[in-house]
Length: 258
Image (cartoon, rainbow, N blue to C red; front, top):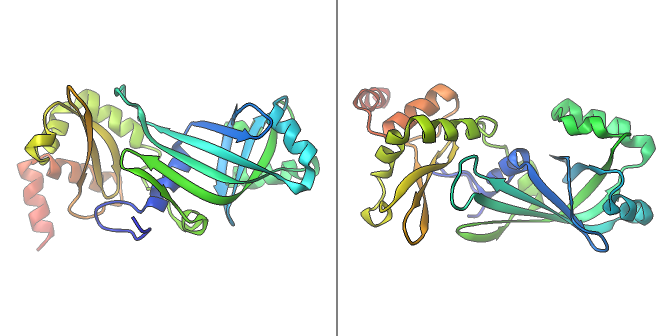
């Protein structure tokens, strides 16, 4: 994709923006240190990731020794499905750039600025068991079942996350456990060759729903777009029912188009 928003899927930058907010498994890697899990990360303008790592980590010591010069580093984000699928990883994002330690004198101010936008519990570790680092982004790459693709840093910073990124996990779990029949109905829209196996909900965003068909030999990920992008939970629920072929909602949609 070229970063242009279409009516059938979010742009790559939008997808990565959502992953930046949603991903709970993040690992920071720098040369001379074992990779370390971050307890908080947040993307902010003009193109940096602010993160918290354990104060006693080697990464913290290496960044301290580097001072204001900074060191090359990569932050890996793993986007897991909330469901018990055979392959739980939906995508991987690699954020590369220059890592710098936030000076002790500025930690509180930077933490407060981040908290005003993203009040994550990990920020409470600052000054105790955690230290604050900044990753000045130079490149972004995302990989999923379709392959790997670079994303310009400017596009990522300017992109809006999907409006349902916070509730997507709960919706997918609800669909899988309580409305598997609806998922099967939506999967009937797929080509016959891709319908052999169990259909599971894989993703939901304002443009459509992702379905994973777990077959005997391999899995297939297929996207089923909504007729139009949705903007709130009511529209989302209606769009899902339309895809499932609910007669009442089909009629409602037809009237809405007149």
